[in-house]
Length: 108
Image 1 (cartoon, rainbow, N blue to C red):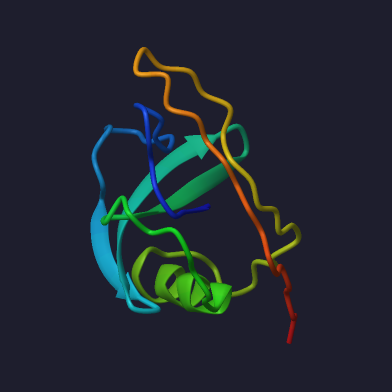
Image 2 (spheres, rainbow, N blue to C red):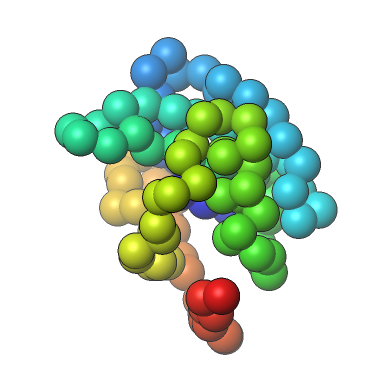
């Protein structure tokens, strides 16, 4: 997963609750979280700067990081791409809003 922010107490699933690594990809510093979930391992990159409101990047850079540094097998396939917000409530009443002006993906 790629999170542009974690607001109102929402956060990625994690075995420890803490990032396992930090890396710089596509001009943003990302904290990396990891946790087994059913029969898969979920990796979540969360932007360390919570004010990221726009992003354009190459998902392959994240996959390359995982294969080079976290043991992801290069034989794995990306089979789903989604975008959205996580439904979440909190006492502060923060409302999530996703506005998309362009969404595209190219698979090479």
